[in-house]
Each structure stands twice: as C-alpha cells, then as structure tokens.
Image 1 (cartoon, rainbow over the protein chains, first blue to last red):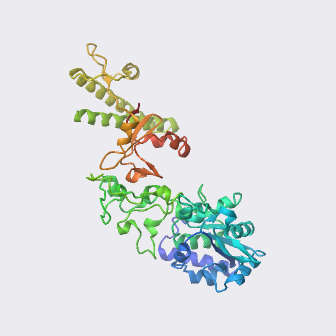
Image 2: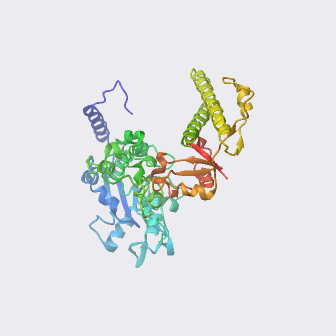
Image 3: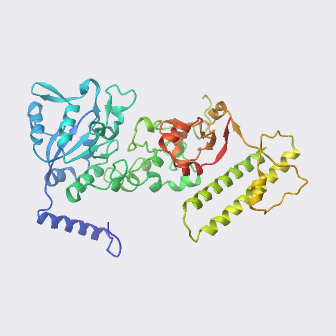
Length: 298
Length: 170
C-alpha cells in the first residue's frame, strides 16, 4: 500500500515496483517456482484467456516467473510421457493451478485426463494427489471455484469445485468465466513476490474481487436517475434487462478486458455475473426484455 | 384513490426513514450526529402523524372499511406536535394486505412492480439493485422468501430496513 506523500504517478509506481523486484532478484529472494496447471472438467476457456494476458504476458510468466511443469493443453509431451512428467513433480515443491470442475460420478470416470500404469487416470485422482502435496492451490475459473458451468443443473457428471475435494486446505479462488488473465497472473505474481494475497471470506484475492461492479460502473448515474435500457445497445443502465453488476465483485469496470479494450457493459450488454458463486444457474436469466414494457402476448 | 396511493407510499418512505434512524441510533455510540438524527426522527414521526390525520379525515368522508386500528396514543405519549382535536374520530389505518395469489401477480414482468415477502411483510424490490430483472440468485419476485432470507442473510436486518414496505401478507 502506497499513500501520499509518496508520489503516485504512473512512472513512480512503475519505478517503485521495478526497483523492488530488481532488488529481490539480485539478492536471490525471488525464485522461479514450479507450476502445475491441471485442466479438468471444463472448456479450457481459462487457459485461452491466460494466453491473452498482458504485463506480464504469458511468455514472461513462462520464462521468468515459473517453471511450467505440466499443462494438459500446452505441453509438448503427450500420453504416458506427459503423465510421467506430472508424477515427477510430486517430489518437488510446486504451485497447483486447477481449471475445470472435479467430476465425482463413478469415482471420477466422467473426466479421464490420461492413463498411468495402464489404468485410466481420472481428474479426481490427479487433483487429490497433487492437491495434497502442492504449496498453494489456485482454483482458476468458475468450474474450479464452485462447479460453475460443469455443475449447472442437472449436473450429470456430479461436478464440484476443488474445495470439496480438499476441504481442509486453503484454496485461493479466482472465479470468472473465464478468469481475466490479470487475476490469475496477478495472483501468481503475488504468491512469488509476497506470498498469499489477502482474501475475503470466500477466499477471493481482495486486490481483484473487492469492489462491486455496480459501485464503479460508468453507467451508475443512469441507475440513480432511473434511466434504464430497454434493449441491448441502449447506452444507459442495463439493470432492467437483468444486469448482475450489483451482485458481482470484480475490477472489470476500471481494468476491463483484452488489454483494457472494453468490457461487457461498455459494449451495451448486461453483466451476466460470471464471477459470482453459483454462476450460471444463480445468475439466470442472463437477459430479460419483459420487465420495462408491456409485452402483448404474454 | 391515486392520492391515497401516493400518501401510502410517502408513509412507507417515512417509516423506512424512521427505522433506518432507529437502527443508526441503536448501533452508534455517542457522537455529535446524535442530536441531528434525533431531530430528523422527531420530524419524521411528526410527518407520519400528520399524514395519518389527513388519511383519517379522508376516510371519514368516504365509506372505506377499516382493517386495522393505529395506536396513535402511543405516538402521542412521546411527542405532541399536532394534537388531534377531541371531536375527531380515531383515525383508521389503511394497510394493504396481500394474499399469496395477489403477491404472485407482482412479479416485475410486463411493467408490473416486483414485490417479495419476508417475515409476513411485503417489500418493493422493483428498483432494488440486487433484483435486476426482478430476479435475485435464481429467485423470482412475487413470492414469500422468509426461509431463503434467513439462510443467506441471517441477522442482516439492515437489508430489509432499506426496502420500502408496501403491506403485509395475509
């Protein structure tokens, strides 16, 4: 936390951060750590989102922050060789990031991620094994944090979040569908530089998830004046269409997406609460047209 | 009738204001704002009493049926800003009673208001930010959510105190 009279200009903040990191690097206080990025029952949306990261970007994370030891999607090795690499990490210290939910049905057979010693290796087995040994566990995305889309009704695979497999462990939760690359890379950087970030009662890092979207929304004055959009594309408050900004906590309004290009409300479409626990079922319906005006054939 | 509706809304607003002030007073320690809040509370109650008297005079003109008596003597024991003249009949409080079926029609759709019931009181959530499109975490407006409120917001009575009350459940 930096407060006046310290200078708060962008240049001075950047200089302060760079100096702090350089100092720690030269004193060997920061070391690259192993990262295992496990993909379970999900859509790989979070890792695709991760590739879109900036400052740091994915290449920087790969080269300078972590030893990327295992990733279902991105690693060169495949088949048994890939699983062997995962097993080798178990003897070392590593940070575990999990994307996707854990399918519990039929002992996890609804989500098989490879085979080990001639038997199918389920996501449930992998996350149980790795989660016990990991120094930190990051649940990345809606499915890993609370089941998300994978656990949406009727949830045929009986999917759950990581916490239910490891009820005793602290799981840092990064909800979002997908997670903004800034939330994942920022949390990872915090782990490397300062240790665990401060989290709220739902284990979300406060630096990204502390503020209601509604409280920082550039369209808040329209809400306060009761000026509501009636259809997508209207440049006013999207509350009557079903905007979930008032119940969702992220930094989307200020930091936005795709390298600060835009965000849903900036594109005249309501927030669907993708970073809220219980998404998508609890956030449905995503859009309603019958609240502001009379629909003739109800 | 339209005027009575407006008066009822005004009364609900004042009741909410009074509840809110009571809540603040109950939770704050001695502070220089205490007198200001007490003053505001006094004015709120005066306004409520004035509106009740006015409604009563309207009621005595028309032939509406009384549903619930208001304990004006309790209010008068504390403050006497407006003394009702003795020849006036006791005012009757017109309070809106909802059946479950009636409540169900206030679902927030087709331009209708959105009401929900908690602990037998009916609240207006039409413009409450957490009830976008008259839905809240999978719940739809027009129903009794006493149990749901207790399971998610136990003890958070400030949430209810900030909502306008529109009546009670039959």
